[in-house]
Amino acid sequence: MSTTSNRPRLPVGAQRAEQSKDAAKAGRQPEVVGFFLEPNFAMMGFATAIEPLRQANRLSGKQLYQWKLVSTDGKPVAASNGIELKADHAVSDQTARFDAVYVCGGMESPTLRDRSLSAWLNRLARHGCRIGSISGGSYALARAGLLVGHKSCMHWEYLQPFREEFPDLDVSDDIFEIDRDRATCSGGTSSLDMMLHLIRLDHGHDLAMAVAEQAIHTQVREANHRQRLTPAARLGVTHPKLLSVIGLMEQNLEQPLDRADLAKRVGLSVRQVERLFHKYLDTRPMRYYLALRLARARQLLTQTDRSILDVALACGFETASHFSKCFHAAYDRTPSNYRQSLRRAWPAEGAKPDAAKPAA
Image (cartoon, rainbow, N blue to C red; front, side, top):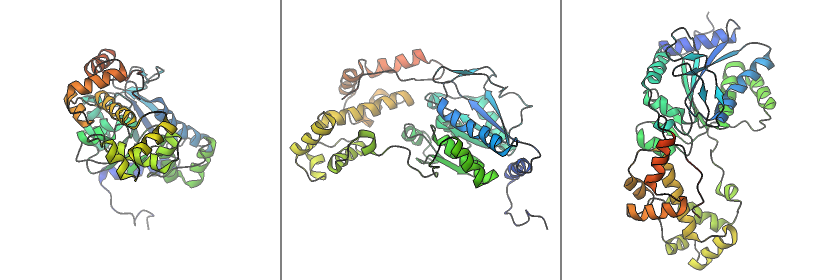
């Protein structure tokens, strides 16, 4: 009896993907992994995705994986750090064969719309290729319609605008999601955890852990590991009441709470809250709150096409003029000038944030 007779019946595309994996495991051919590089892709997410494959080959003594780089036109692509990588293929190359393809995105992913990329990804998906993404690359998958009916994840900085643009998709704040023939990760070092998980599925626990040790990655994280540091770690403070106030602020950016309400909700007086902020953060509570709201506004200006007024309202400002005044005080330019400067600097790909003085 065939060893696969007890497997559940899979769709044709999934069957091809399973057959490709089985062939790779049997040593008949390596798994060919493509990395599509969006302009200004995040180098960290890319590097921590491709290096585990190299180490898996080295440690197993077999060519389990091959990798190829792809760009829209086959020309080199520069990462967000300015390093340029040579592409092996263009999306129009019909001869290139892939078992899995990952779209490597970055800060400009929310503004990128490439029909040729969408068509290419759909063609690969129809032929059983696993389709995945790194960081903002999930935007490309969503716009190609490839995340419908699949669970995916997104970097915390893009999560809210992504959900607003694609309200019907099941997107989480996990560090990675593997749902049948889709594999998405939030970026950064989460690429390493996702690849270790896939190596473990394809070639066993021992090889995956050996790769992790080579990377000095002593805590292999599961998919549901939280993306962000805790407020205590992020701010370097441990006072529970102060952290509770900050948590309330972060949860109420669109409709800010006043000082009295913040203090009442944590069981302190307004004066006690002010003392905590002065002692541990050297600022005033409402100044800190304003900085949070302005930081969120800058994200929305960078990552979305929402109007200035919509951004202002989403961040707790009653009028666009008040928002503009506060934004200018924090970043030395108005929201309109900020967005215009981004478009001048990145006319094709969208926005890239510049350095600005802290709002606090």
